[in-house]
Image 1 (cartoon, rainbow, N blue to C red):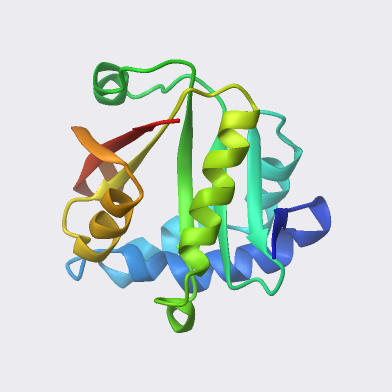
Image 2 (image 1 turned 90 degrees about the vertical axis):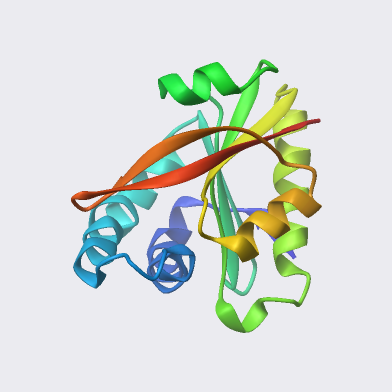
Length: 170
């Protein structure tokens, strides 16, 4: 079952994020850079902030095997602003599931619940950035209708990664 996360879930979400974020990183990413990102962006304190922010929504599987984070704000990145054609939009900022659930359909359930939530909150599109080297994730997003509409950069440690910007019209 997929549900909206609450403030009581912050610690378990941080643990889940720490376990799943490395799965999406390119092989060239330095372990120290991955850990730094986890420590600064995916900590329990940060999840407390995300869960308290009315412009964000976290969906989680009841067993904490996967989660998504939606951001209901206009994109701030200039490359994303230029690429996204449909407004208002929501960013699917995070979409992760534990390795042992891959292929189980959980990620598809999380995706559908996220798209449904975005639609219910007035978004006419959803966008995301995904590392261009992450072939598995790119296939998954394409399967769910997220078309490649541009590119952007993402800083992981001292290295700039290159992301595809993908968008789906709801």
